[in-house]
Length: 219
Image (cartoon, rainbow, N blue to C red; front, side):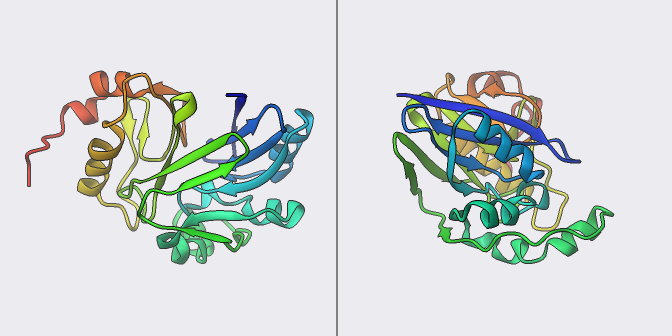
C-alpha cells in the first residue's frame, strides 16, 4: 500500500512524532503532537502532505504539547484514550513535576478511544489501537498492520521499557501489556517508539534485558 512514515525527534525530552501519509492522496495522520508545532507543520507542507487528524499515545506533556497549536491551525480532530482526560487537563501540574515553566493547554479531544481495539482510518491508512497501560493511564500503542509497524509510544523501547515511577505508573501492568499485547506480534514487526531509535519485536523478544529478566510467573 502507498504509505509513508516520517519520524521527527523534537522538544526538551527528545520525543518522537510520526507523520503517516497516504502517498497517493497526500493525506496524513500525526501520531503524538509532541512539541514545536511549526516544525511538524513545515515538515508536512514540504512533502505536500495534509494532516487530517492526530492521535496521542498518552497524555504525558511531551506527547501533547503541540496539540492545541496544531488543532487551532488546521482544525483537525484529536484522538486520545478516555482515561487520559484528567492528565490532559492538568499539564501545569505535569510541568511542575519536571521543574518546567508554564505549559500551553492541550487540545480538547474530539474522539475518545476505549480499551477495546479500535481502528482509526484515513484513506489507505488503518491504525489499530492496542490498549497498553502501565507507563501511563490510557496508554495506547498503534498497529499499522499493512506495513508491519508498531508505534509503541512509551511502552517499549530499543533495549528498554517505559518508566513506571511517574504518577499513574504501574510496573506489573506495563509488563503485562508488553507480554500480552506486543510480544504477541510477529518478530518482523518494526517498532517505532516514543523515544530513541527503531527496533523490532524479534530483537526485543530476544535481547531486551528487562523482558528477559522478568519472571512472568511472579505474583
